[in-house]
Every structure is written in structure tokens, then in C-alpha cells.
Length: 254
Image (tube, rainbow, N blue to C red; front, top):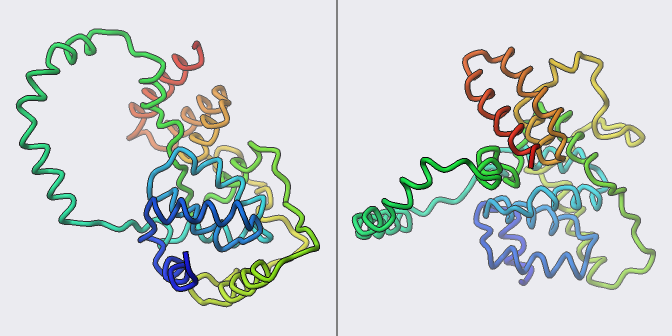
């Protein structure tokens, strides 16, 4: 990947595909402190809906000097934007239509069998969307902080020696920091942590994302409690949350 390609991906992260992601992975393996490369690599995993995204988010935070900038990036509209290719979508739909009759006839017996079979552990995992990339809203800094606490990562200290390419990458990072599109938050106290614990009640901090964080951490009791709180906050979704609680209990028994 050359400088021109890298700059293009910085400006159009929605266009990052699997090939780009693989190249970016090689870059950060060689230059682990190249923060800009880590940021768009993370976006590449998000574009693919990769199961590696959640773990990589923690690693990226460990290598990020100012986590508030990372949080702003992953909660920005630019980060959630995905490239859509109409022609490819139409092609997939046409291909599915051509084989649908054969598929239905072939799998009918298996579908009937599955309908009356007890749900397996894997099915509960799929229902709860465990392993799916976590999506944080800009108001969910508390949930983001809870997720980072899962690992034992601490900020990585740079080694003193740098080669010419690392110096060049540092210059790119500094340039990006000044770019209006991803400008750092003003008036940040350098001695303060990214997220200060809110003194508000625990219930007021509860979100669906935080409930999912507890699931990823395998804190099943906390997850159940979270969904019970959400049921009270959003009674119109109580049946949805009840199904999740049931799935968690079945998963916990395994």
C-alpha cells in the first residue's frame, strides 16, 4: 500500500475492503505505534462485521495516546457509514431467486426437524449476537469504558528508537490530528481519564450496548439485570428483553 492509497482510505474509510484490511494488518504488525493505520484497520473490520472487531477495539485503545479521539471516531457517522453496491446486491438477489425452489425442496425435512428440536447453545449465542461488533453511541462513554475494562491492556509505551518510516508515520498522525474531519476534542485535561464515572444512578446509565458488553464479558448475571432494567425503561420492548433474558439463562447453564 502506497501513501496515495493510504491517504484515500483515510478520507473514504467506507471504501476499505478485505484486501485493504489485510494490508493494514501487515502495516500495524510492522509499525505497532502507527495510530492512524490502527484506526482505519478497525474500520475495515467493522465494514466486514468481523468477530475480531471487539478485541481489536481494546488493542487499539491500548496503543492510542488519547482515547477520547478514538471514542469520537468510532461513534462518528463516518465510522458507521458503509459502502453499498447496488449492482452487486441485485446480482445476489437474482442468484437466490434462481435456486430458491431447489433449496426449499431440499431442506424442507431438515427445517421441520429443526423446528421441533431443542435450541442448541450455538443458537442462543446467535440470538444474543455474541461476537458481533459492538456499536457505541456518542452518549455511551460509560459503556465504552466498561468494555475496555474487560482486558488487562495498559497504554503501550513507545520505544525510544525509531526508523525513518516511523517518523514519517508520526508526521501523518500529527497531520490527521489537525484535520477538521477528525479534529480532537478541545479543552481536554491531559491528566484526566477518557471517561469519568458518572455519579448518576446505575439505572440511568443502562443501555442495550452496555447489556451486550456484559454478555461479551460473560457477566451473565449483570446482563440479566441490565435487560430487566431496560424492560422497565422501555416497556414497549419488554417481550424482546424477556427473550434475551431467557436465552442468557440457557447459555449460562451450558
